[in-house]
View (cartoon, rainbow, N blue to C red):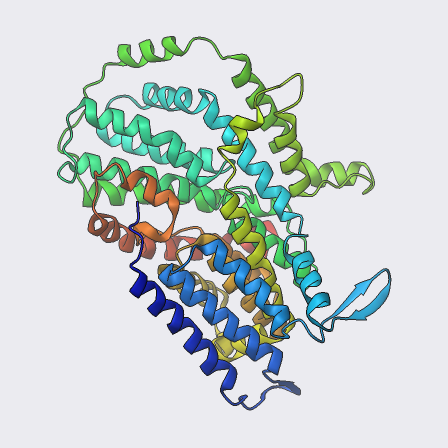
Length: 508
């Protein structure tokens, strides 16, 4: 658990954020930039939006207040400081100009908490909770051990593979929570010493990495994924289907497994060849679980329904002539609701509520407004040209690598997958539009990379869960994570650059 900051340190960081905010809003507006015949200027509203963005980033980096509290605070400040003034929206076919605090407040709340993403994440948390509440997670882990055998090298690979596959469909944090007790049980059974056992270090880091690898495979895998899809739809009218994401996400995800495995074995060669567990013991534990319970069967059926509708929605839409088109958020919450209804009856609200991360939902929804306003005020456009204006001259391979590597670095400072996506993606969309590029060429690599924070333990709660077991140090994690981040940057660049044109997802 992270120690709370001292009152003096907390006040210092709060004041630092306010000082930076005051400096930005009082700086003279920079000269307009020219892109061909177009003139791009930073407006008063754009400057105020950038000041709020910097304030939020400082508070997010220092964690002076909880992430979700910072997000709500910034959301409330936007109408008060006039960021929403002058924004035009279409309502009932009429163009309406927003003016005043009340109108701005209603619009920013609608833009944030009125987004259908709130139902997507609620559904995902409910589905993850059902998987955790039943014995499915433990059963699948034991089946993996029976399949992989008792070789320490193969056990590490098994945890990477299982973590990757599970996190394609349920939350990364949930997967880490499922794998942790089994991995700790293995290490305690073989009397592996915390911070001394190389096998312990490799296995527990694999428990972090596997869920991260799988998180990029599907839109349901990690928070930045549906956020990227949402921004693409709302800011540039491009709809990325579940299947289109998977065409690149799954190969990229699976490609990381053998390289991650090889790297862990190279850096932490296991001190023993086999774990002291006989296959008979594994069979005994599996037998102890008995046959699939009705709750386990029901959970598998609901998951099957959800995954089928996610993947085959384009086919359903085509067959029905467009009359049935199911958004991924609608399918997600449908699956969540089915868990409470007959004939499934998997969950009670008391059990389900333990698995709903309301702070994550508040963070995501409140931050959406900040990302949207950064785009609508023109601040994202100005930022993109200021810092990334030269990338147009890059070839596709170098361009994708530059985006992946940049987001990897940004992830070190923004200790949240969601925050990274919300800050970076509107800027990249603005840049792509300014250069008449396919926005997905920039947004896709950024979205994939936003979920892969492997350098600092604090970059994701998924890392923190295995870290609490005490088998690896922050230094161990960072040492392996820096190397893996370099490998990820190269592999993602190659996979995205090659598969994009082949699958028709990208057009260069």
